[in-house]
Image (cartoon, rainbow, N blue to C red; front, side, top):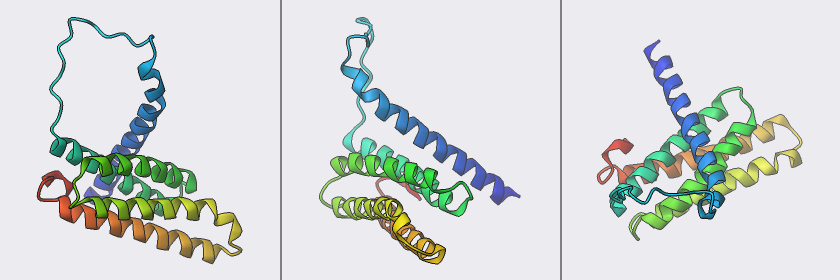
Length: 163
């Protein structure tokens, strides 16, 4: 019972992160708009360090990947998997700009595996049998999980919340 509740909480948290990311991406074009006003007396908040930003991005990416992997196991269909994949690609690209040369190859591996998953989902209609479709999804999702795990293991020390 506890494990089911914990899994449900993780799924809900991951869904919220994906929704927040999608809303944030939709709001980006409005940031340059004159409709967005700033209060002149507002104090600027301190910017996070590069390491903090990378850890935050990696944590968000972990939630998105978990959401995507959990969506594959649920009966919710391919739409949540595709949304998670697109959100994961976006966040992985952000993370690639934040990490140094040590972690960049791991992030790039994750980007490639997420792109492969997206391409595979787009090409599911070309496969003739349900077994071939299932095998393709399983292989692509396994690659994403392995790439995320490899990145999380390496980032664990500088980002202790990524366990």
